[in-house]
Image 1: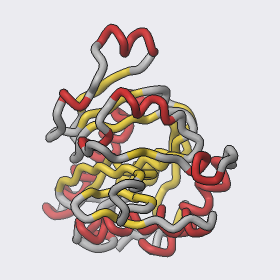
Image 2: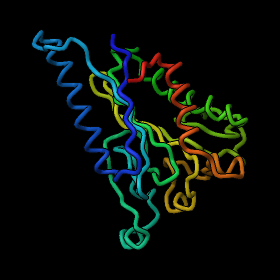
Image 3: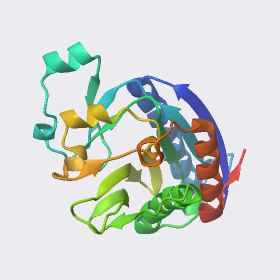
Image 4: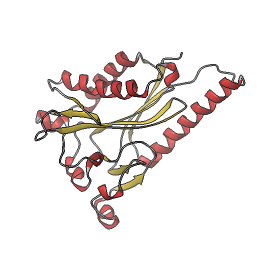
Length: 233
């Protein structure tokens, strides 16, 4: 099993460009798995990747999401300079923008464990542990994938990290969006993740000061590495 992970920093990149890039890697890994199983592959292991990036303002709707959870029309989207895509991950609608850590693990889970529930819980746990490094207690909310602060208090619960993934032949794509210095105003134009009457927050808002994005990324990478057994290359 290959636990090496190619770490790729894309910086600020257009959502569709990065989606296409993800898809090309995802398809190549699946094709390699098929060749291995047929005994036709020169390389006997599949590769793993983790892409870190930020996106210009964009709303994305998961394949089972409700378009009605986008609360503004195309004209308003254009006036605000926001793109919109209906995409092939799980989950409902979310926002991506500058100041947010977006992580796209493209992993062959046959190299780690074949359990989608464990995979999602490890993604959540990496963010929970990172927030703990900053003195913030966070948690999971039953029936709502992602990471929440005060999730056990219906009047105070606020989401700080959204997760939505796609899985085929145990290969993953899409991933998580962790609000660090995110402009939260953009969440006012959607029903985030299709969950009404719940707030969204960021690390900057919780701590009252803008955060070093690279520092947060490095803490997150540390916890991902420990949880999954990643060997970054």
